[in-house]
Amino acid sequence: MFNEKEEAKSINLLEPVGSGESVGQISISWLTTIGKWMLIIVEIISLAAFGYRFVMDGKNNDLAEQINSQVSTLENATWKKSVVRYGNYQTLLTDVKTVRDKQEINSNLISEVINGVPLTLNVESISINNGKVSLSIKTTDFNALRSYEENLKNNTYYSDVRVNINMKDVEYDVSISFNATGKVE
Image (cartoon, rainbow, N blue to C red; front, side):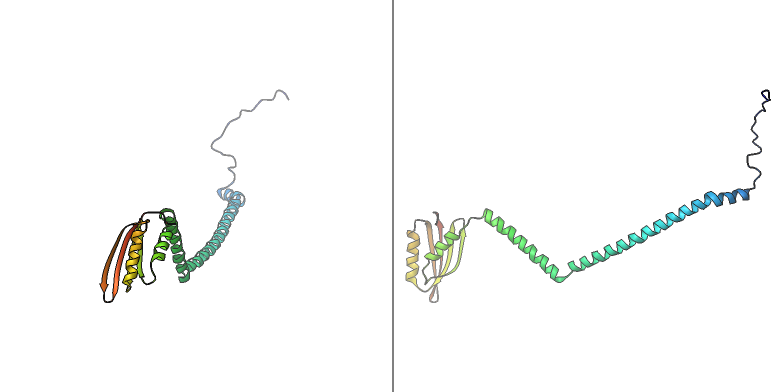
């Protein structure tokens, strides 16, 4: 029992293990085990890709409909007019802010100049630029015009009073300019 002879182990490369089976048997065995599972896995992956694509196409179509409805809203004539109107309002508000911050307020000066003009003199236009006041007046009352001129020249708030009178038919066309030198309150 203990003295058994050990057999020499050898490798025979000419006869591989399982050489008794034919190629057909090996192929059928492979197809029924490993190949079957590979095909099932590939089909599952294909079905999952198809389902994912189906869901994504649905979302894409919904998104395209939503975009088209919003585009049609933006192409509406009323909407375009509103955009222009509110854009103009925004520009106007920006201009008002700029004018309010940077421009001198002349309302008191305008009020004083207009209130000082006699009722018989018709003020056609008035302009104020850096304290320089220009008036365009039409009248038929020469005495009221001379009185207004004297009042301007005697007012300490005004300097460099210039009056230009032209006669047209029976009406006087008058341009008056002067500098407002003091603070009007």
